[in-house]
Length: 108
Image (cartoon, rainbow, N blue to C red; front, side):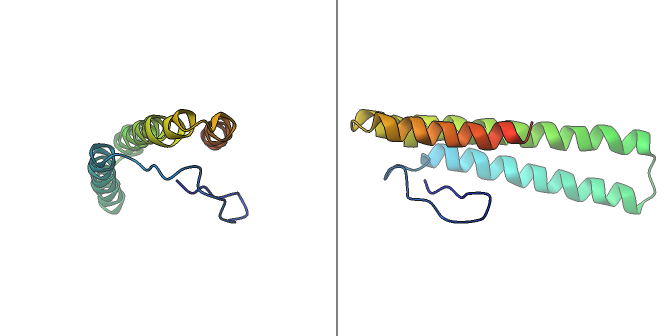
């Protein structure tokens, strides 16, 4: 899976592996639900609903996004990182894992 730096430069693929079909389907479904939830929150704003009603909805969007990130990270470890390790590219696997963790933890 190709990764990007903060400057947007493309880095070399860490392996020929990519997310499984099931993981991609799960992520697509999660993202579709998040998209629908965000549209509903936007509708709440347009309808002048109270902040007390909107805040829990935005917290739910954030929680759903976090879970999508967790699933993506798990998929990354199960495919990209695992393939590197199995093909004797342990250092490449560690670099891939480190890059993914750095990206995730930067957002915490």
